[in-house]
Image (cartoon, rainbow, N blue to C red):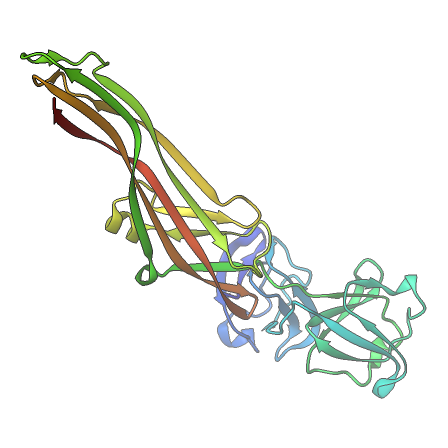
Length: 334
């Protein structure tokens, strides 16, 4: 979701308004020339001192701004909707895209080359850019956007010194667990076996300890597709209410995934198993301690949103539980 929240006073105080699309004239909303702070979520916004996107522009990328540059002097707001992932701009020395040219795809200080204060026109192939009059992002600015080529700079002619591409907001991930495509399996594994023999004609007390203690565990993990576009450090949560309700596995309601980490969570617990006290006459008693191991694998659909663009990927959630421990008794007459 791309959003801007504007406030009447500094430090996010006073009256506020929230917008998710362009606002050509704030006077129509009774909020003209009164913005002193703002918050941006998602793609950048351009704020103008005049209505209908005229006057002096300022650019606000995702973040919180407890005061704005043109305090109490903003009259229109425009959302940057371009794909900002792979920016490119071509600068031209002369008007109408003539003369020498320079192609850029990253932030550049033109003082370090031979194109400083030489630009008179530009074409944006991809993304959106901020053009600065001075180094270190100083002075007056122009906002350059794909599809809005400028054949003549007018007052900005031969003054471009610093340039940078705008960045999209943080990537968000929405995870949908596809329960209808789940795969499950289970198996019983003997983890201990205890035997006792009674050759007499009377019941005999079992000579082994009456209780045994075993450890069980639950391991959850998530695996991304081979070519994920999710950035390192991005976090999202899987809702596991369906898994817990349907399979009664010992898991939390949510499982947090972070790109770049192991994405595995294990828990363990101690299970105490009681064994029978006596063996019947002329009988061999075998007690098998059995762990039921259950595995559930569920596909997960990931909707990855960066700025105004959404992409679909897939992953897999896996839960392995082995904390269900029981005993099986086998009596053989001798």
